[in-house]
Amino acid sequence: MTKRDLVVRIADETGLIQQDVFAVIQKTLDYIVESLNKGENVEFRNFGVFEVRARKQRIGRNPNRPEQVVTIPARKVVKFKPGKIMKKVITGA
Image (cartoon, rainbow, N blue to C red):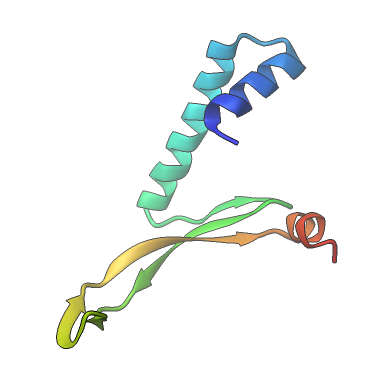
């Protein structure tokens, strides 16, 4: 599903104008990114939690030349942990 698909579906179900729905979805995504950039977790009850984690610097190897060592720098990554209801719906457990 793309953002466009989501906009069309919500607009059809609610009767709202697609431009208004798009603006709300885009603003929501912008605020999520802004919060993650500040280092804050973003939690949606029963859906899941987005959080920023720090990865340590590590050593990697070129598979074509295993003797060649490459240093992979430390970086931040976004992790998503699904909520209880989402996990139940997806896995059926």
